Length: 393
Image (tube, rainbow, N blue to C red; front, side, top):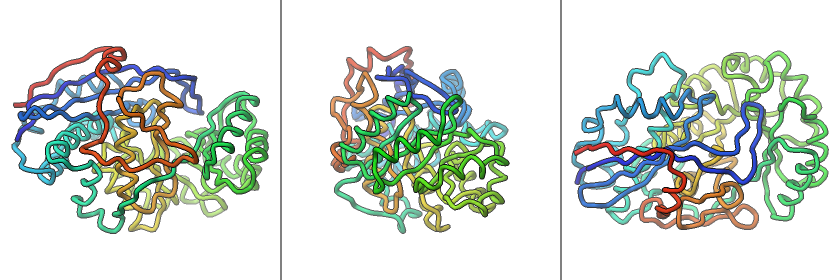
């Protein structure tokens, strides 16, 4: 079988409320959705979220990369089974001339195309996307088969009243873990942590996400009053350009450091391990380039003795949520799990199935085939800003 064509959609997904953190605030999300159609007629779907402040990508650069790509060379080979499709997806490089750009440039687009190809191939052969994990040799030490997984909650930058209401919802909903956004201008992080910990109680696992808010030389001072609240990790505390200072600063901190914006590729992962910049990786399918690169980053972290989180990006629809579920149920050792916020966050669901987590953040494995979800074409049409068709074979 062969890939016949790609249909690519720029969609604008409205959110139910504005999400703020130290790097950005948004009330909608500009996503790329890709439909990969095989010559057999089977279709697969993928999604990626370009973020200029993470990988340097925008909607415009994604369209330009597609115009420049030789899609018949990248996707035109015949393949016999899912393993063949995995090998073809492994060779997918949508930004071969972007070496001078920030690491990870092109990853959101690559993720959308890769997932659409793997979804189509898995559907064609009646297998779930999670079967891909067993086909990646590097994943052997982290493979798992879990019938369900537990997601963590998040508290973004809000007014004190809204923070308190959100904290009560999280407690009543039975979550075991919660992430709190800090470092936002005009917000008092100490008061936020006092309020949140008082409401959530002492048992819930609490971690912070600073989204590059602090300079490396003020990190100890910023974290010192927050650590007594039982913080288990702090995510991307410094700007990407200052990440090299973390090796020395970590020695004086009593809280583990997680990389996010500075962890977008295998090269980033190897560099962070070599220079001792962090204790954990935040792996997100879109910013890391898809399912296959994310698997390898998790395997590298495991081998180096680092922890890892499977994170998500604000505005992911059910397509990326489903892909994340397949990843989470087939990979062991995930310290924190984020995603599947669909019903709680997006106004327009793009999938017919609701993959939102349930009470306590628990959610079942998706049996497939492929992603195990189907696109709601009418919803997709309502959200589409522009679309194009690219012939492959």
